Length: 305
Image (cartoon, rainbow, N blue to C red; front, top):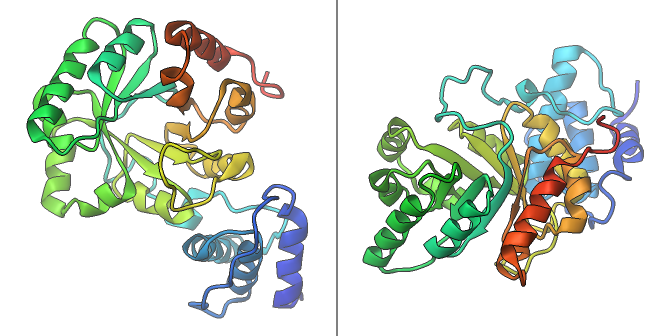
């Protein structure tokens, strides 16, 4: 029988190439003494997973070992049941949205929302930053009006009460916003019929998001982005691929620093949507760029034909 250190080295040997480029993280204090758990905790920390994600992975590795009776260091864990995700159909779930949301444009105001919706972008998000409640309400209502007749699905970032009142298709929340919802607010939000998208930046946050059964899960940042200060390092395509396998029963949106030249490798992970911000807003001819990016979304993925 392998000892713990040897098992950890086997895990590293099989998966180091997938997760190359991350500096090792300190091994967190173990919460149990099972061998598969301890080996995975060491290996995942060495592969650069931060403490709460290494812990999440190690627990999943142990759960799979107990479920199957085999340690299997060559197989990265991706069984939803091993991470404690809700079985399908989910007991807690928001209204469904399309499995493939396609090109997903994140836009600063209602003018941009209308412009990209008229250009044929299938999914748009209003990310309007303001502390002025009246301005927020005006912008959200204008965005809802702007997509009328276009077929675009409109998500509102953060401002969920205004989004309900305005009749938006859905909302998008970050982890902090999700944590700020009490049980009553969550019940109101789910009961409204709005679709919910949730941002995640690693395994622990994906497990947290699954607990509320969102309509889709956003995963990132995939590549470096200058749009906002990120609490976590860019996740890279290797991590995105294993995240996509774990969340295969959810619609998935990849986000963060993704340019046209990276669409093929991102789509090869199996995600059904790519979110872009600068690629459209900073483009000299945004409508032409949107058309080009939508064409890339439809291109055959090598190896999947």
